[in-house]
Length: 364
Image 1 (tube, rainbow, N blue to C red):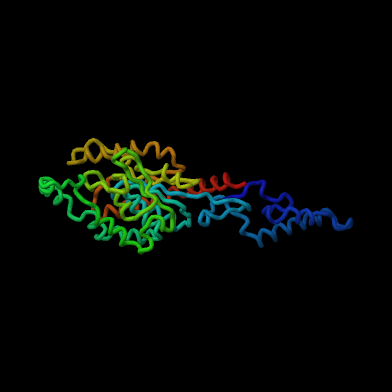
Image 2: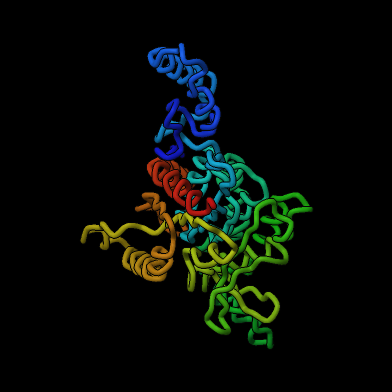
């Protein structure tokens, strides 16, 4: 954060809090025998002495913010910063890369709202895990196995067997996977004291869509694993999750990029991490099997995100093109993480600028 002209003392050309009163006292003629030249030289000597003794008051315009939390003027309040972590399957691994850069730069995060994969990554971060620890956990095969207890092709081949229970009167909710194992995995990944959303170190909400009324909801209380299971319950792939009187599926259906939900948590500044693909494909790209369906899903998610993107103060969009939503390849996860780091690096000047502007707006 740089100082404005009015914050500098006109007498000694040093920081205002060197005390203009002090400078005025020095500038008064002590004796009629003092010459004007002596007084001028004295002012220059004071200016040099103050600049050497108080270097912390001179901040270059481009200098990094120490945690974006330091303010120069007394009475300034640091803006409350929220992250809105969007859904996007494996592309959502990019959130880890963004978090790593924010950690390194000391930029504080006060709230996190996450949808689907954004909720998975965001919940672990709010529980106190570092970006490195989240990466290690999510790239491990145990994470994939908890989400896909049986490989998708095998599960699809067994679909006829799903009708047998229905013949004897048992009618479970629709979906290839139940999801309980994944909920347990998420809980087991955290200390027992952090398995309730209200106990997390950073306020967090998981966004899910209610099938009963077609609306998006912020889950801010209750069991963390259950909330994540609901937020990441991809329709048809995973069964809906019952919480209270609602029947939840993936939050991406209604709020794939939860900017509004992040703002409602009390944020002054919302940074959205959008992991939708960019539309720059060529005609030959759609000759592959399932390529058209893949693109249609991306089109739907981008449409859903339009209003949320406009509502964000800043949008970081990693280049995750070519990474399939449901990819289980470790290489794709690593590619997404790297894309998140690159995008966050490029966005740092704008992030600092937005934090500075928000700080000034909040200063009395």
